[in-house]
Each structure stands twice: as C-alpha cells, then as structure tokens.
Image 1 (cartoon, rainbow, N blue to C red):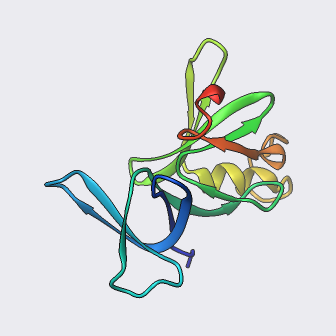
Image 2 (cartoon, rainbow, N blue to C red; image 1 turned 90 degrees about the vertical axis):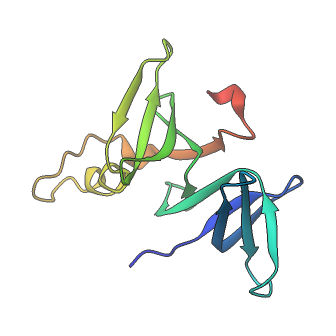
Length: 137
C-alpha cells in the first residue's frame, strides 16, 4: 500500500501532512501538518497529493510537479482516477501518459514481460511545480 500524504501552501511555505479537508462553501482547503496536534487545521491554498513515486534523484513526486524528460517539461495531474503525466511540447500540444505509475515504473524495466521500456523514464526529474515555477509551463 502506498503512503498517503499531501503538500499545501500556507501563504509562506509548503507544508506537508497526511490529512486534508475541503470546505465547498468557502472554497477553502485545510491541512494538518505532520507533527501537529490532530485538531490543528491550517488553511492552505494549493494542495497536491504524493504519487507514491520518486524521480531519478529520489525526490518525491507530487500532483502539480513539473517533470523534465527529453528536454520537455511534463505536468503531473490527477485525472480520471489516476495520476497522469501531461507532456507539453513547444507548440503546447498535450500528450497524455495514463497511469503515472506505469509510466515511471513499468517503462524502466526493459526485461519485464509487457514492458514498454523506451529509456525515457530513467531520466525523469522534478524541476519545479506549476505554482512556483510558471515559467516552466
């Protein structure tokens, strides 16, 4: 079972926690920061869930991260029940890789049965996120 955790921006810093709550009436996200009391909810802006995977440098990959591969930036999104990699080409054409886990894991095992290894995924690297690094989009 993968580890469930989130990151959220509190207006000054990214904080990390394992519980989030959304209030649809106020359009507000709340998070309990790791190590905080269970009733200490913090208001956060941008929220992203941990995918359970790491890049080539061992950096955790979160929803909203920008990954670089083949001199192209890719965005991690959660859509249709799975994490996806959305590739942004120079012409802004989007190419979608369904199921981030399959893209990162299965494609890195050249001898595995059914593998679609293409040498790409072993070079994926987190280079920023869509909130702090809009210049990468």
